[in-house]
Length: 136
Image 1 (tube, rainbow, N blue to C red):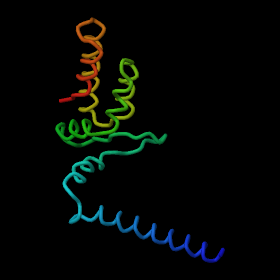
Image 2 (image 1 turned 120 degrees about the vertical axis):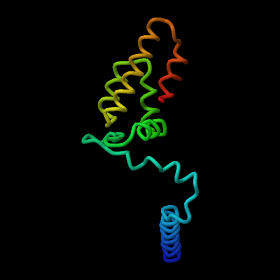
Image 3 (image 1 turned 180 degrees about the horizontal axis):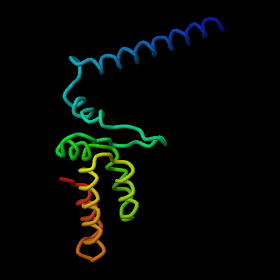
Image 4 (image 1 turned 60 degrees about the vertical axis):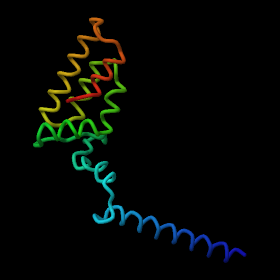
C-alpha cells in the first residue's frame, strides 16, 4: 500500500514538473506568443532591482516617449499612487526608484504642480490622483 502511494506521488510530481516546464517554454517561444503577452512584457527589460532589493524602473538612455510609456505600464506607478497625498514621499519615491533624468524631472514637476493645486483648493483628491496617474 505504501509503495503504490509513493509511486503515485512520484508520478504526479513528475507530471506536474513536465507540464510546468513545457508550458513555460511555449510561452517564451516567439511563434507561440500572442500579442497580449508581448504587450504586457514589452517594458520588462527596463525593470531592475536596486541594492536593497526594491524594484526600480531604469530608463537611462531611452527616449522620452519610451520612458513615459514604460512608466504608465509599470507596477511602480501603482505603488507611487498609493503614496498620495504624501507629496514628499512621492518625490522621494521618484528620486530613489526611477532612473532616467527626463522621466524623474517630469514626475517631480507633475508632483509639484498637483501639490500646489491640491493645497490651494483648486483640485480635489480624485482629480489630483487622476492627474498624477496620467503622465504625458
